[in-house]
Length: 302
Length: 231
Image (tube, rainbow over all chains, first blue to last red; front, side):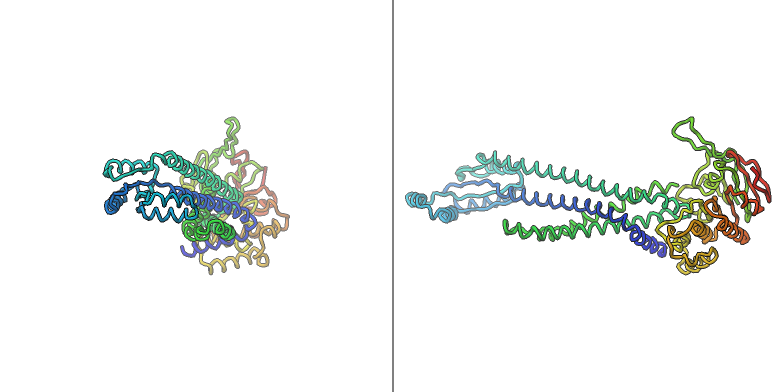
């Protein structure tokens, strides 16, 4: 049994070597399929990072009256942070807002003069809240209206921001859905192209498969070397695709860093390397195994 | 050893009125160590008969037994067990183009799970018998027609099958190579092997002076011990 297994493996490698010119075109098509699926994987990742970044920039602010005690505001903050719709909540005191305002407009004499004339801090203490979804904002505002003493609240800016929030979440949702449909569609096209190339390559060997049957080879002894070849083809395709991805990511990493220093393409690649390899193995090697099995199956009925 | 019982084979195309009767009500037995020549014109049913014995085709009617086993009832996935007991020489050789002479011959032993030592020993021996020692590492497209046919014969013999089916083994050969193959088949037969030879080579059949089964339009019209090729 072990000897037969070794023979099947050896035969697969030998056939791969001797049919190399035929296999090159198959490797190329599987490489395209693997690369396209990897490209869609990263495109999906980029769009998610971008969407999450945009969503993070959306927030609502609850302004408290100047006489609202900070301890009370902090206890309200603790209560709100327990809501499942809340992504992030931050307390900003009136003094902090004032400091930030002065820092921002310190060179604007008119504003600075006006501030001096008021003679007191015109800003309110506030809670800045990020929700997980657009609906989440509405739930949080409902909670604020029902469960927080209204005499403490000066203003909630949700209603002015609602149209913008709704628009942003609608766009990100469309992008997410569109990306998913695009990804699935192109992945199917790439996989079908790879599948058919392997199938055609094996169908060219129809007569050989039939001869194997006629001289007494069992089904697995026939199938085995083709599966081994399919796996080798998948590995070569994955290797080529990885080389291409590393070259492209290395090249664009520097360019993107010059625009957005906090973003690193290479870190993104390394952080998701496990997932990428798994995806490539499923597509590359999976294609080889499934397409070979399908193609051979009909010749094993002789 | 082999028993065909009222076997009919009809090839039907998609068009109902275009049926071809390849064999009609054929019955005959082949005993252990017998040498049978199947003769007849092209299209008389010789190749179909061999294909049925090999399980490559199923009869439309009738039964085929190989040492008591009904071939018509064996599942395709299990046919290899019967085929390992048969050595087949195909008219078009059916060699693997990406395997060398040695590998083509060894393949049959490999599928049967023989050890490397056994394979090396037996392949060397058979290469010597068929006179292809110096062509052991050549690929089929580097061999002449006669050499290819000898590889096909060697492949059919290497696993010591109970029976040899030879379909026009000399069909593509010149007189010299034909004689070589005939001598080889006789040598194998002397070792006690059963041989069924399908041919339309009159000289070959008359030279052999063995049992001759004559087919015409899918029917057996003559079956003679030490017969002659008469059509």
